[in-house]
Length: 597
Image (cartoon, helix red, strand yellow):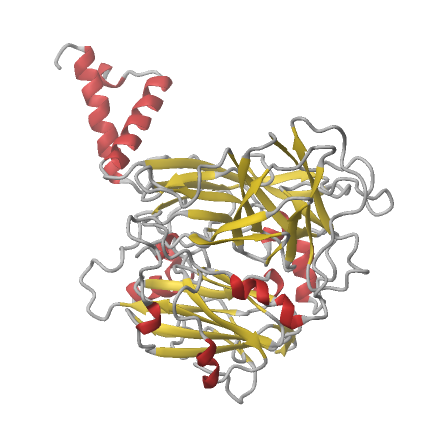
């Protein structure tokens, strides 16, 4: 038995070696993270409240990767409810098993853990992650995700002197369970209690509106230098206007695609959207400067106290920021002017993206559209005596067995492939109705917002070309206004109330992909669906098989083994290859110690 006499430290090192060797077989490097989600108590707006932290941090840590890296994130669920983590904008090529939404994945129960393993294939840019279930993002659990260019691919601007992430979002002092209870009882969430910047409340720019003693975000800079600011709206449901007092914002990237560079004094960032700016420190630093994120498209006099305020501090600053905040755009009642900003965003077709060829060389405007879907959203309505939100009259019900898992295990009746391609004149109802999308099709989606609120829509697994946007009702004649040359690619787009937005997408990523509103209240109430995109000539290469650690639920719950990290579950559980790798490593060390190697 002397063969297996090792210290706990030796065994830990051998496990580490075995884990490393199991990943080092891949050609591309791997970055690994452990995420422990749990509750902590903080007071960003002066009221103690329970928030979702990752490794004790609120917001969560940065995931920092480079194009084509393999990413391994081990998520420990120490919450008191089910959990899924999602990575919007990360395309999960051929691998919707890692997408982290209920239509594709079974949830991680409390005290369990799950390894997300995916490649950031041919991507660059600024993204964020968050928990996707039951309004949990309204309590935190979010953090930034950066994919850097490979060294051989130049970025289309001079290397910045620094890189800052700002997570901005509306915030309630009621946690997600209370907000959920409000929606379940038919109530609106009401006005948020404030806007946070990196999990912190506003700087006390006004002694009446802002209580004393709140923590606030400070960004420290040097005069004359240029910094990249990656700004993400991680909030619940409020569009925000972002601005830095006295400084121009040079827009350079949105959700993984470089833009034609344009200067703005302020920029609207809608729920779920991410944008990058270059900001040059060209002011005289007579004082600090305000960083502001304030509610957009609302009654400003009522919402005046709902502003996020941080501080830009020059190293040679002569004093604190004082006076009123820089003004927001004055076009609230001029809807035509408000839409000019998103219409002006263009893709930088001369810049390389994740690959050496220009990212805009894809001539999408000359491709024939194979399917058109008009998705109409309306104000929430009562269905089966419950408040529900709809797309084309259908309020989505998540399947008890995830869609593709049901396919592969021949579970019948989990969902229906009958989502209508236009609004129908029929009674609103709840259903698990999914778009039967065509693999390698080129789809046109019209997002028609007949609701009274600004909305953002997101498509998992893809970026799409934002080719059109206008007020009124979309018609086939609207195609004459489409941008068919340099429309920006992104994965989350705003749709103005009383208006429409048109996007085009090439459906080359097999799997099952969520298409949803990003406003958490409407999403929770059912305003989503999925696209099922399956290669009819599947040869085992267009879609990855389920991972070995796939979770089972619903009709397949009996297949699931206990993966609780509090039950003494072994790291080797469900991974026989790792077991044999470790066994060989143990034997090798033993033989080496005895002089046999």
